[in-house]
Image 1: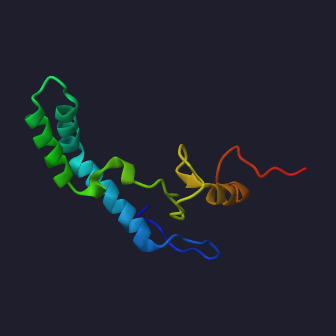
Image 2 (image 1 turned 90 degrees about the horizontal axis):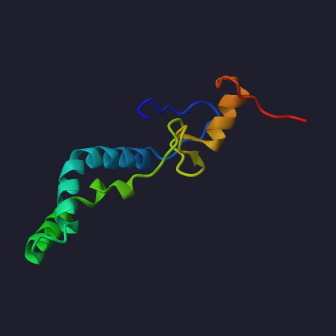
Length: 112
């Protein structure tokens, strides 16, 4: 997504929104292990309640943007947040443009 350029005729998402999402991705990677350990302690029913509660407090102290659920699936080409194919990480519009221009092997725009 770092290679985002506004090409002629293509609409792009707001750069700030794209950068915010990239920041969330970086934070998720940074705090991933810490969050896993704390969640493991919280969900362990064999541990005493006060120990689990302390882990819960530590988890709430972590940044909200480090949570995996806050990451938005965006198009790699345009940054568009809606209509994104998960497998390809490309929006439906970008996929159609690439298929029409012959950039995706074996894919053609249907016509009848």
